[in-house]
View 1 (cartoon, helix red, strand yellow):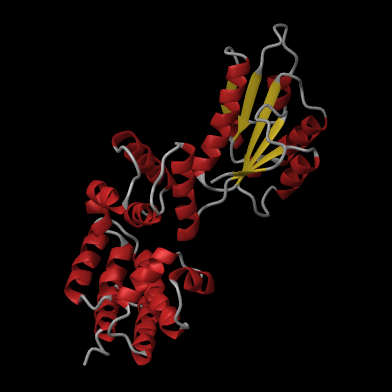
View 2 (spheres, helix red, strand yellow):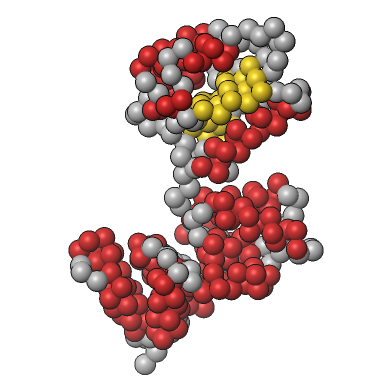
Length: 328
């Protein structure tokens, strides 16, 4: 979810949206436009790409109007502005015009950092829109979406939605909206499964769950379905690694309540219960074998082998066998 500074007035003279998550960047723009149009329904919105903002263009857009109209000027990919245009923007930051809100969308990073620093020094309202590369961040996003819509969803339901939909925030937001519109009461894991069972079967985490449970046939079926529906092989190796590491962490941890173990291992309590069920049959040697298999598969899908699909199938079979190594 986008994080904002304490200076959180959408009608601040300058808003700086920093990051590469398109959904959050678009929301930052929509928030400013909505606030401006709430203040003045006739607000003029100019949405420009970096190549459309040429030297002198900003001066034209922000020059005083006879009608004193409210205006929002959006500049996308501000890190790509030309040096002369950046000079114009920096000059404007020193004395922004009344009734005009400038919104700069900047990817962050080293490119165009001078403009980023200048906007911050000028006191721009800042909205962080980072790319959510971690599953935990996407899980937090889903929880936030339910909260914003005033609905309750169980932790298992939120996790199932992330597992089913994947990394696309627009799809995750759309799924939350659909569920809240269609379902009354608390949204649980069964509801998510009913709506997104096809997607869930194709998810990388389903492959991992079946593999660490020793269900090789089902894991291979889920793997082939995942690959056929476009799931990236690297996401599958990541899920396999997470699944095996969770087994290893919990098997070496001291006994205790799920809440205590959750704090110790950095897992949600419900996941502790799930991993405990998956642990039956695992041995320390089995965990070692499985981790090596994941490492080999990871190398295979990142260019170290000629057939990523075979590398994944081999890893899945090895992990499933390791999961049954302690069952006698």
